[in-house]
Image 1 (cartoon, helix red, strand yellow):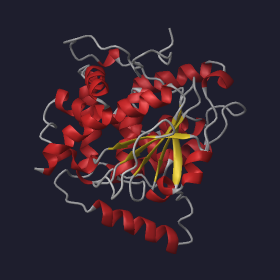
Image 2 (cartoon, one colour):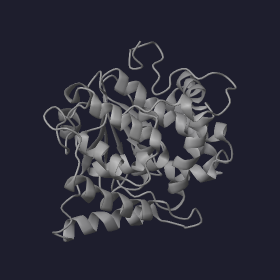
Image 3 (cartoon, helix red, strand yellow):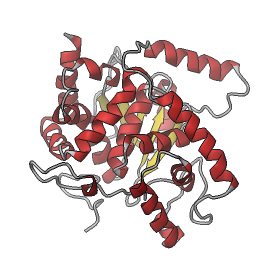
Image 4 (cartoon, one colour):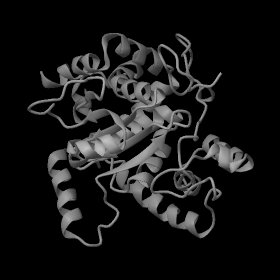
Length: 320
Protein backbone atom coordinates (compact mmCIF):
# COMPACT_ATOMS: atom_id res chain seq x y z
CA UNK A 1 0.00 0.00 0.00
CA UNK A 2 1.37 3.40 -0.95
CA UNK A 3 2.43 5.60 1.97
CA UNK A 4 0.61 8.45 0.21
CA UNK A 5 -2.77 6.72 0.15
CA UNK A 6 -5.50 8.87 1.64
CA UNK A 7 -6.68 7.69 5.06
CA UNK A 8 -8.64 9.34 7.89
CA UNK A 9 -5.31 10.21 9.56
CA UNK A 10 -2.74 10.38 6.75
CA UNK A 11 0.91 9.93 7.70
CA UNK A 12 4.09 10.68 5.80
CA UNK A 13 7.48 9.03 5.81
CA UNK A 14 7.87 5.81 7.74
CA UNK A 15 4.17 5.48 8.56
CA UNK A 16 2.89 4.32 11.92
CA UNK A 17 5.60 4.30 14.57
CA UNK A 18 6.05 1.36 16.90
CA UNK A 19 5.63 2.43 20.49
CA UNK A 20 8.82 2.46 22.55
CA UNK A 21 10.83 1.27 19.55
CA UNK A 22 14.59 1.45 19.91
CA UNK A 23 16.34 4.05 17.71
CA UNK A 24 17.17 2.46 14.39
CA UNK A 25 18.34 4.43 11.32
CA UNK A 26 17.08 1.63 9.07
CA UNK A 27 13.45 2.30 10.09
CA UNK A 28 13.51 5.51 8.04
CA UNK A 29 13.19 4.77 4.36
CA UNK A 30 14.47 7.65 2.25
CA UNK A 31 11.93 8.84 -0.32
CA UNK A 32 13.14 11.27 -2.99
CA UNK A 33 10.11 10.99 -5.26
CA UNK A 34 8.89 14.50 -4.50
CA UNK A 35 12.17 16.18 -5.47
CA UNK A 36 13.28 17.42 -8.88
CA UNK A 37 16.38 16.35 -10.80
CA UNK A 38 18.38 19.43 -9.77
CA UNK A 39 17.74 18.79 -6.08
CA UNK A 40 18.76 15.15 -6.40
CA UNK A 41 21.91 16.15 -8.28
CA UNK A 42 22.81 18.55 -5.47
CA UNK A 43 22.45 15.72 -2.98
CA UNK A 44 24.60 13.45 -5.10
CA UNK A 45 27.29 16.12 -5.43
CA UNK A 46 27.43 17.03 -1.73
CA UNK A 47 30.22 15.62 0.41
CA UNK A 48 27.82 15.40 3.35
CA UNK A 49 25.18 13.11 1.80
CA UNK A 50 24.87 9.81 3.74
CA UNK A 51 25.36 6.52 1.94
CA UNK A 52 21.71 5.53 2.42
CA UNK A 53 20.68 8.59 0.39
CA UNK A 54 23.27 7.86 -2.30
CA UNK A 55 21.92 4.31 -2.52
CA UNK A 56 18.43 5.69 -3.17
CA UNK A 57 19.80 8.01 -5.87
CA UNK A 58 21.50 5.03 -7.50
CA UNK A 59 18.22 3.12 -7.39
CA UNK A 60 16.41 6.02 -9.06
CA UNK A 61 19.02 6.16 -11.81
CA UNK A 62 18.50 2.50 -12.55
CA UNK A 63 14.72 2.92 -12.65
CA UNK A 64 12.61 4.48 -15.37
CA UNK A 65 13.45 8.19 -15.02
CA UNK A 66 10.11 9.42 -16.29
CA UNK A 67 8.27 7.46 -13.60
CA UNK A 68 10.32 8.36 -10.53
CA UNK A 69 11.33 12.02 -10.91
CA UNK A 70 8.42 14.47 -11.41
CA UNK A 71 8.84 17.91 -12.92
CA UNK A 72 9.82 20.66 -10.49
CA UNK A 73 9.49 24.39 -11.17
CA UNK A 74 12.87 26.06 -11.28
CA UNK A 75 14.65 22.78 -12.00
CA UNK A 76 15.22 20.40 -14.88
CA UNK A 77 12.36 18.21 -16.01
CA UNK A 78 13.27 14.62 -15.21
CA UNK A 79 10.70 13.43 -17.71
CA UNK A 80 13.12 14.34 -20.49
CA UNK A 81 16.43 14.72 -18.65
CA UNK A 82 18.25 12.16 -16.47
CA UNK A 83 19.69 13.09 -13.09
CA UNK A 84 22.37 15.71 -13.72
CA UNK A 85 26.01 14.65 -13.73
CA UNK A 86 29.36 16.02 -14.83
CA UNK A 87 29.86 19.79 -15.06
CA UNK A 88 26.49 20.66 -13.52
CA UNK A 89 27.13 18.34 -10.60
CA UNK A 90 30.51 19.95 -10.02
CA UNK A 91 28.91 23.38 -9.95
CA UNK A 92 26.36 22.18 -7.43
CA UNK A 93 29.14 20.76 -5.25
CA UNK A 94 30.64 24.22 -4.78
CA UNK A 95 27.26 25.77 -3.99
CA UNK A 96 26.32 23.03 -1.54
CA UNK A 97 29.62 23.09 0.34
CA UNK A 98 29.51 26.85 0.76
CA UNK A 99 25.94 26.57 1.95
CA UNK A 100 26.81 23.98 4.56
CA UNK A 101 29.63 26.11 5.97
CA UNK A 102 27.30 29.05 6.53
CA UNK A 103 24.23 27.07 7.55
CA UNK A 104 25.22 25.51 10.86
CA UNK A 105 26.04 28.39 13.15
CA UNK A 106 26.46 28.58 16.92
CA UNK A 107 23.35 28.25 19.05
CA UNK A 108 24.70 31.00 21.25
CA UNK A 109 24.55 33.55 18.44
CA UNK A 110 21.77 36.08 18.99
CA UNK A 111 19.96 37.13 15.85
CA UNK A 112 17.21 39.63 15.06
CA UNK A 113 15.43 37.68 12.34
CA UNK A 114 13.28 40.62 11.27
CA UNK A 115 16.42 42.70 10.80
CA UNK A 116 18.09 39.93 8.82
CA UNK A 117 15.00 39.61 6.66
CA UNK A 118 14.91 43.34 5.92
CA UNK A 119 18.60 43.22 4.95
CA UNK A 120 17.95 40.44 2.49
CA UNK A 121 14.96 42.20 0.95
CA UNK A 122 16.95 45.43 0.61
CA UNK A 123 19.83 43.58 -1.03
CA UNK A 124 17.43 41.89 -3.45
CA UNK A 125 15.96 45.23 -4.50
CA UNK A 126 19.19 47.23 -4.69
CA UNK A 127 21.60 44.73 -6.19
CA UNK A 128 21.14 43.81 -9.83
CA UNK A 129 23.32 40.74 -9.32
CA UNK A 130 20.87 39.35 -6.77
CA UNK A 131 18.99 37.63 -9.53
CA UNK A 132 18.19 34.33 -7.80
CA UNK A 133 15.83 35.83 -5.22
CA UNK A 134 12.12 35.27 -5.76
CA UNK A 135 9.08 35.89 -3.60
CA UNK A 136 8.57 32.14 -3.33
CA UNK A 137 10.00 28.86 -4.61
CA UNK A 138 8.73 25.32 -4.69
CA UNK A 139 10.58 22.81 -2.50
CA UNK A 140 8.60 19.61 -2.99
CA UNK A 141 5.74 18.12 -5.00
CA UNK A 142 3.52 15.30 -3.80
CA UNK A 143 4.03 12.42 -6.26
CA UNK A 144 0.42 11.29 -5.88
CA UNK A 145 -1.72 14.40 -5.58
CA UNK A 146 0.53 16.95 -7.29
CA UNK A 147 0.17 19.36 -4.35
CA UNK A 148 3.25 21.52 -3.82
CA UNK A 149 5.19 22.86 -0.87
CA UNK A 150 6.41 26.44 -1.29
CA UNK A 151 8.65 28.62 0.87
CA UNK A 152 8.46 32.38 0.41
CA UNK A 153 8.24 35.83 1.89
CA UNK A 154 5.46 37.94 3.35
CA UNK A 155 4.75 39.55 -0.02
CA UNK A 156 3.87 36.16 -1.47
CA UNK A 157 1.56 35.41 1.45
CA UNK A 158 -0.18 38.78 1.04
CA UNK A 159 -0.89 38.27 -2.66
CA UNK A 160 -4.34 36.70 -2.91
CA UNK A 161 -4.02 36.41 -6.67
CA UNK A 162 -0.78 34.42 -6.36
CA UNK A 163 -2.23 32.17 -3.69
CA UNK A 164 -5.25 31.41 -5.86
CA UNK A 165 -3.16 30.93 -9.00
CA UNK A 166 -0.87 28.44 -7.26
CA UNK A 167 -3.74 26.63 -5.58
CA UNK A 168 -2.46 27.35 -2.09
CA UNK A 169 -4.76 25.62 0.38
CA UNK A 170 -2.67 26.23 3.49
CA UNK A 171 -0.43 29.01 4.77
CA UNK A 172 2.11 28.71 7.59
CA UNK A 173 3.18 32.03 9.13
CA UNK A 174 6.58 31.74 10.80
CA UNK A 175 6.83 35.36 11.96
CA UNK A 176 6.93 35.86 15.72
CA UNK A 177 3.56 37.63 15.79
CA UNK A 178 0.32 36.23 14.44
CA UNK A 179 -0.48 39.53 12.71
CA UNK A 180 -2.89 42.28 13.67
CA UNK A 181 -5.78 40.50 12.03
CA UNK A 182 -4.78 36.86 11.51
CA UNK A 183 -7.04 35.24 8.90
CA UNK A 184 -9.36 32.52 10.08
CA UNK A 185 -9.04 29.05 8.64
CA UNK A 186 -11.80 27.99 6.31
CA UNK A 187 -12.73 25.73 3.37
CA UNK A 188 -10.74 27.82 0.89
CA UNK A 189 -7.54 28.13 2.90
CA UNK A 190 -6.21 26.97 6.26
CA UNK A 191 -3.69 28.86 8.39
CA UNK A 192 -1.11 27.94 10.99
CA UNK A 193 0.87 30.41 13.08
CA UNK A 194 4.18 28.72 13.89
CA UNK A 195 6.70 31.17 15.49
CA UNK A 196 9.65 28.87 14.95
CA UNK A 197 12.29 31.38 16.15
CA UNK A 198 10.94 30.89 19.69
CA UNK A 199 11.42 27.12 19.76
CA UNK A 200 14.47 27.31 22.05
CA UNK A 201 12.40 29.12 24.71
CA UNK A 202 9.70 26.46 24.95
CA UNK A 203 11.62 24.26 27.40
CA UNK A 204 10.87 21.23 25.19
CA UNK A 205 14.11 21.04 23.24
CA UNK A 206 16.05 18.80 25.62
CA UNK A 207 14.47 15.48 24.66
CA UNK A 208 13.44 13.72 21.46
CA UNK A 209 9.81 13.65 22.62
CA UNK A 210 9.91 17.36 23.41
CA UNK A 211 11.37 18.26 20.01
CA UNK A 212 8.79 16.09 18.28
CA UNK A 213 6.09 17.96 20.19
CA UNK A 214 7.50 21.29 18.97
CA UNK A 215 7.67 20.31 15.31
CA UNK A 216 4.56 18.10 15.11
CA UNK A 217 2.01 20.91 14.45
CA UNK A 218 4.12 22.13 11.52
CA UNK A 219 4.84 18.84 9.75
CA UNK A 220 1.38 17.49 10.52
CA UNK A 221 -0.40 20.55 9.15
CA UNK A 222 1.72 20.56 5.99
CA UNK A 223 1.66 16.82 5.25
CA UNK A 224 -2.08 16.45 5.92
CA UNK A 225 -2.87 19.17 3.37
CA UNK A 226 -0.43 17.90 0.75
CA UNK A 227 -1.78 14.35 0.93
CA UNK A 228 -5.29 15.57 0.04
CA UNK A 229 -4.06 17.71 -2.86
CA UNK A 230 -3.82 21.16 -1.24
CA UNK A 231 -0.59 23.10 -1.78
CA UNK A 232 1.05 24.91 1.14
CA UNK A 233 3.07 28.13 1.47
CA UNK A 234 5.43 28.54 4.43
CA UNK A 235 6.50 32.14 4.85
CA UNK A 236 8.29 34.62 7.12
CA UNK A 237 9.47 38.13 6.30
CA UNK A 238 11.97 37.27 3.55
CA UNK A 239 11.47 33.52 3.25
CA UNK A 240 15.08 32.77 4.14
CA UNK A 241 15.64 32.04 7.83
CA UNK A 242 12.49 31.16 9.78
CA UNK A 243 10.51 29.86 6.81
CA UNK A 244 13.70 28.26 5.50
CA UNK A 245 14.13 26.33 8.73
CA UNK A 246 10.47 25.30 8.71
CA UNK A 247 10.75 24.18 5.09
CA UNK A 248 13.86 22.16 5.92
CA UNK A 249 12.00 20.38 8.73
CA UNK A 250 9.16 19.56 6.35
CA UNK A 251 11.59 18.15 3.78
CA UNK A 252 13.08 15.98 6.52
CA UNK A 253 9.61 14.65 7.33
CA UNK A 254 8.36 14.23 3.76
CA UNK A 255 11.54 12.62 2.44
CA UNK A 256 12.81 11.06 5.68
CA UNK A 257 16.13 12.84 5.15
CA UNK A 258 18.80 13.80 7.65
CA UNK A 259 19.22 17.47 8.53
CA UNK A 260 22.20 18.15 6.24
CA UNK A 261 20.59 16.55 3.22
CA UNK A 262 17.31 18.37 3.79
CA UNK A 263 19.13 21.71 4.09
CA UNK A 264 20.90 20.97 0.81
CA UNK A 265 17.61 20.17 -0.91
CA UNK A 266 15.89 23.27 0.46
CA UNK A 267 18.66 25.67 -0.51
CA UNK A 268 18.95 24.16 -3.98
CA UNK A 269 15.29 25.06 -4.54
CA UNK A 270 15.49 28.45 -2.79
CA UNK A 271 19.09 29.77 -2.70
CA UNK A 272 18.41 32.47 -0.09
CA UNK A 273 17.60 29.91 2.62
CA UNK A 274 20.04 30.13 5.54
CA UNK A 275 19.64 28.37 8.87
CA UNK A 276 21.28 30.79 11.28
CA UNK A 277 21.68 31.07 15.06
CA UNK A 278 19.55 28.64 17.09
CA UNK A 279 17.46 27.71 14.04
CA UNK A 280 20.45 25.68 12.84
CA UNK A 281 20.26 23.19 15.71
CA UNK A 282 16.53 22.43 15.47
CA UNK A 283 16.82 20.16 12.39
CA UNK A 284 19.62 18.20 14.07
CA UNK A 285 17.45 17.71 17.14
CA UNK A 286 14.48 16.78 14.98
CA UNK A 287 16.58 14.08 13.33
CA UNK A 288 17.10 12.48 16.74
CA UNK A 289 13.35 12.59 17.27
CA UNK A 290 12.84 10.86 13.91
CA UNK A 291 15.30 8.10 14.78
CA UNK A 292 13.65 7.66 18.18
CA UNK A 293 10.26 7.07 16.46
CA UNK A 294 8.58 9.87 18.41
CA UNK A 295 7.31 12.00 15.52
CA UNK A 296 4.21 10.12 14.32
CA UNK A 297 2.68 9.86 17.78
CA UNK A 298 3.35 13.57 18.37
CA UNK A 299 1.63 14.41 15.07
CA UNK A 300 -1.35 12.24 16.03
CA UNK A 301 -1.66 14.07 19.35
CA UNK A 302 -1.39 17.47 17.65
CA UNK A 303 -4.01 16.50 15.08
CA UNK A 304 -6.50 15.48 17.79
CA UNK A 305 -6.14 18.83 19.54
CA UNK A 306 -5.90 20.72 16.20
CA UNK A 307 -2.57 21.81 14.82
CA UNK A 308 -3.11 25.49 15.64
CA UNK A 309 -4.14 24.78 19.22
CA UNK A 310 -1.14 22.48 19.63
CA UNK A 311 1.26 25.10 18.25
CA UNK A 312 -0.24 27.75 20.51
CA UNK A 313 0.25 25.51 23.54
CA UNK A 314 3.85 24.68 22.57
CA UNK A 315 4.87 28.31 22.10
CA UNK A 316 2.88 29.65 25.04
CA UNK A 317 5.80 28.68 27.25
CA UNK A 318 8.17 30.74 25.14
CA UNK A 319 6.30 33.94 26.02
CA UNK A 320 6.35 33.51 29.78
